[in-house]
Image (tube, rainbow, N blue to C red):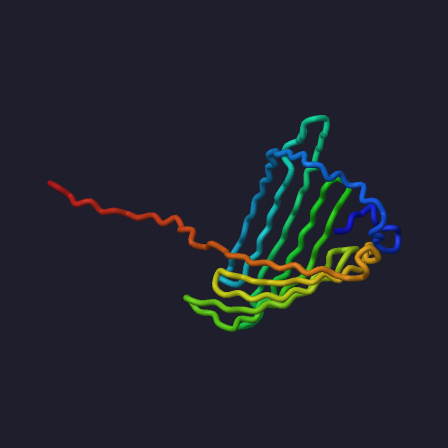
Length: 196
């Protein structure tokens, strides 16, 4: 395990002190996050979506003199899907996050190729490129089978922090299952017989 205080400006030095408290004090608290999402669909494969979420809604006192006041984090998302051809979609998106003085800007796109598309089954592969501005370039690869998506990304760090990571990037993996069985609001009219 490596700690920030073991970084000497060039490499991690395991002989340096960690300055970490390894006691057994545990605290629990409630943290609330909220968000919203709207989407406009022109067809099954062409749409635009906008979202906003905010995190750390409550200030937290952890007790026994330790006080932690997490700054609220705000996240804005814009996503779209554009049907280019019978089997090809372009899926660009952007995300902006702010928390205190920290900020992150993420932009990029996936290209989606449909192996199968029918009313009962969808199979697609996705390949994408992304940029976390002033930090990393990201490549992504994914597979979709109906509501299940599996993907992997690799970050190529190009920020000054790359010295601390020994110029290595990082893998991320995701498994997503989308529940899309929400019923549409259907008005049903009942006809009552006339009794004269």
